[in-house]
Length: 406
Ligand SMILES: [Zn+2]
Image: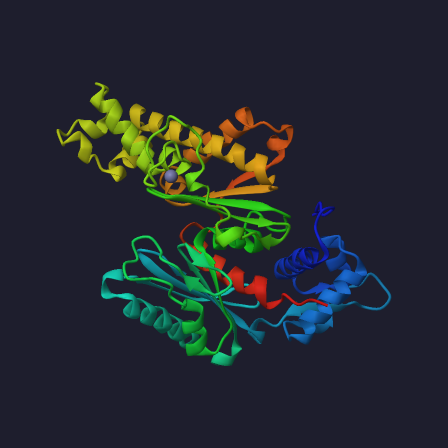
């Protein structure tokens, strides 16, 4: 479990070490300090500092004694699961998902409701508040035990001020101070992160990118594509919180037109929209496919029918996905060139509906990307599927509540 940290600053290293220690305890508790040092590879003084901090917060307890091969028996450390709870809320166009987790990183409750945006902003915010209330009640805990509430939502957003600026298709939502609203209602520290950055945090804290320095998470959906990144243990927001917006990175100057007006953006070249347009244009050129046989108007071919046909072996639909995946691979190569992450995680609707997509993209990265080390960059599917946003929101709280370390 060794980590390359030569270029990581002190604060970030503390964050990475904390996550490493908590994860090691979650997986191995009860555990002695000695085994903790052995498994994490951290120095005894780092271990001592982190444990001191976690014990001050009541998160860690010392109990019982472990097995010993002679001499004094070691004191065992374990997590006080009831020391605190974290709530993660994911807000999307379709659903509001809420999860409550205890300090053992065990999910103790989950709720999903339709967002029903047509009911208006106040009603939707009211539903979020209602879900938080229900999660606290169902867990049977005091509100004071909730250490933080994380919210994952579509951008654009103002991370520092906790404001949703104007999420696409959220009509009437302009500069909504969601953090102030939720924090004001519950008096619990509340944090906001864009959905793709939250996905990156979920993978960094709990998923396939655990204990790495730097990670880039990509969400590929039917119509949208976005990214989020953690650089040296911290979410990288960039100017105007715009870092990771790779959907409009141009990968083909003569490519298909994008919803933004430009041509050949990754979003226009690698999402379900590309697959649909490719299949339609090839059928118009005279090719056949299972999706064109029922006599329906070619322009009305449904994206879900294309997914189904590809999964049943339809050659044209498979070819369309292969091309979209190839295009994503080119985009990933560019990302590796710019920020050189240890791990790239791919999630979203497309890899869920057509799992071979990731494999094809990886083949492109390995064969086309420039740097020699691209073969060592791990490229993984997301660990969490549909729960990615809510788990990301929980991770966001974890990432913030232990910020001031000794
Ligand atoms: Zn674009």
